[in-house]
Length: 69
Image 1 (tube, one colour):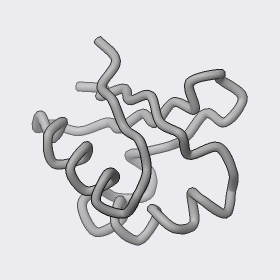
Image 2 (image 1 turned 30 degrees about the horizontal axis):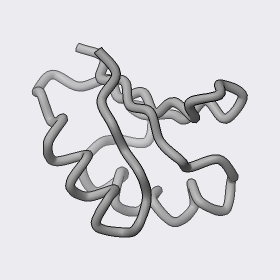
Image 3 (image 1 turned 90 degrees about the vertical axis):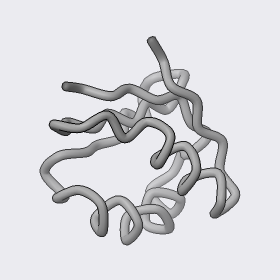
């Protein structure tokens, strides 16, 4: 399943901040940001629905994160 989130993570520097947290939950090859998209999309390829966990973790470090359906 591919989870898709709208974020305010719009620079490489901000990705560097969330990268350790994402890597602790998912392998690096399983997630990516699209900084060219106006919604700064985060995509995560996972076998489990981790939507609430991702939103909780990203907002806990000060960023906006909303699931796109």
